[in-house]
Length: 146
Image (cartoon, rainbow, N blue to C red; front, side):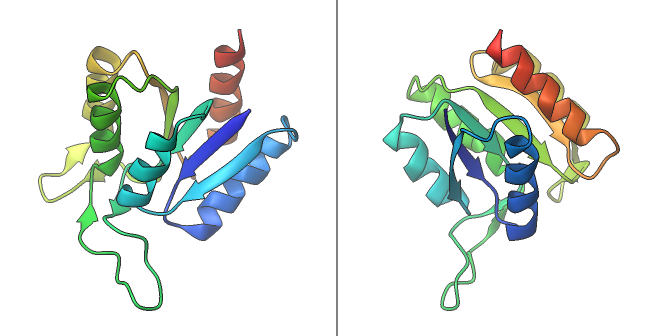
């Protein structure tokens, strides 16, 4: 199973990988650290699952690059682009925030939107750092395997 993790925080990415490896140590992980890197890697295809952060920098941050503007709902924008190109790879959103952007878009309202408009790819939303997030992730992975 090939898994793409689109996440800009190194520590969070590693914790997610290690969490999954406790139940599926045969999965292959590839990392993307920004909106643009995530889009590019998704277009390469061949993924069985995408674990996607909601808020991402536009470009990958490096010692010479600031990452550009932070995209507060980058995860939604990525899924929208996937659907427009008919890329139907299962996506699990993993975020540590409850609201996004200057308009304070709630995770709850985004989740309702995903339930209505993104059902071909969206498999669930996980609130990272909340009690039981690992069990929620295991449950979604289990459901996908049925």
